[in-house]
Image (cartoon, rainbow over all chains, first blue to last red):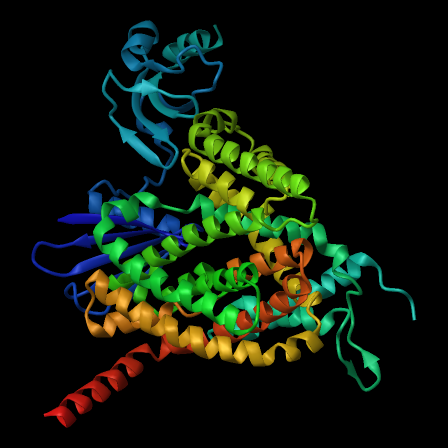
Length: 158
Length: 405
C-alpha cells in the first residue's frame, strides 16, 4: 500500500492511501485537529466523504487498527501490583538523565526502576530498548517498588 | 446621544462580521466578500437610512494597526505554507501547467491595464492583481465540494503555489520601482536600499532558519506567539522603512519559519491571531473604499471580470490538460482558479499608501475591491457548476465536430 502526503495551504495535511487491490482512502488532517475521510473507488472516481472525527476519536481508531487498544481497568493500575507501582516521570531540561540513552542513565541498575513506555508529544514509544534516547519533555512511564522510587528521586534530584 | 466608546464600536463591528460571515457561509461563499461589504456599509462613506447615517467607524485609522498585522500574518502564512518540495517532486507536470497559466494570464492582465489607458507600471500592477487566485477561497471551496480528495486538487493547489511565488516576486520587483521624486540620485539610492534589503532578507531567510530553529525553542506558548508576531512585524516594518512592501517582507519571514520544525506549532498558535487580524484587514479595505469610486470603476471591473475570468477558465483548463487530467477535471481546474482575494487586496492596500500616481492610489485600489467582490462570488458559483459547464463544453465540441463531418 502506498501513502502519499501533501500540504493543503491554510487547511492542513492530506494523506492518500492507495490500496493494491484498487481504491484510495483519503484522510484530510486539519490544522485544528479534525480529520475528514474520503473514499475513492479508483483513481478516476470522485471522492465520497465518509466521516469526520476529532483528534481523540482518531487516536482511538488508530489504536484499534494498531491492535493496541484496550479498555482501561476499572480500578487504578496502581493496585494491580503487590509491591510495585506505575508512575509517570517527566524529563525536564535540568534532569540529569535528559539527552542520554537509557543504557547510559543506568536507571535500572542504579535504582531498580524500569521504563515501560515513553510518551513523546502525541506518540507513545512502548517497551523502549536501551539505545532509546531520553529527550527533554518526554514523560516516562516507569514501574518499580517504593525503595526503587526513593532511589530514583535521589538520582533525579542530584 | 452619548458618544460611543471604542470598545463598544469594536464589539459591534465584530458582531456585524459574525452576522455577515454566517450569511456568507450559508450561501457557500467565502467570508472575505462579506467582511469587505460590512466595512463599506459602516465606514465613513456609509449610506444613510431614513436620515440616520449607518457610519459606525469614522476612520479606518482606529483599527489600522490590527489591519496592518493582518496583512503581515496573511502573507507570513503564505510563505510558511509554501511547499516547494511538492512542486519539485512533480516538476515537469507542474512546470507545464504553471507555464500555461502564467503564459496566458499575465500578458492578458498587462494588455487589459494598457487597454484601460494605464502606464506600463500601473498595468503591471493590474496584471498581478488579476493574476493571483485566492488560496483562502479556493481551499475552502475544495473542501466544501469534496474535490480535496480528487486528482484535480493536486493540480489546482500546485498552480496556486506557483502563482503565489510569481506574484510575490513580481510584487517585490514592482514595489521597488514605486519611488516618488524626480531627482535621479535619490531615486537610484532608494532603489538600491530596497534591493539591498530584499537580497539580505532572502539570504537570511535561506541561511537563517537554523538560527530561528534554536531561537524559537521556547517552552511557553504565549512567548512563542509573541515572538513570532514580533519577528514578523519588525522585519515587515523595516521593509516599509526602505520602501519594500511589508507583505513581501512578511512573506519571506514566513518562508524562513517554514524551513524550521516550528511550522505545526505556528499553525496551532498563530493561526487564530491571523484570522482575527485578517478580518480587520478586510474590514479596513471596505472602510476606505468610497462607493462613488467603486461605481466609477464599475465599467473597468465588469470588463476585467469578463476578460480575466474567461481567460482563466481557458488557461486553467489548458493547465489542467497539460498536467495530464481528463477534460472534466481540467474544467474543474479552470473554474477553481477564477476567484481572486487576499493577495490582490494586499497589493491594492499597498498602492493606497505607496502609489505614486492618482491611478495607483485611488483608481486601481477601488477597481480591486470591486473585482475581488465579483470574482470571489462568481468563482465559487463557477466551481459549483463546473461539471455542468464541462458537459456544455463537451456537447458544444461534439456538435462542432458533427457539423464538420
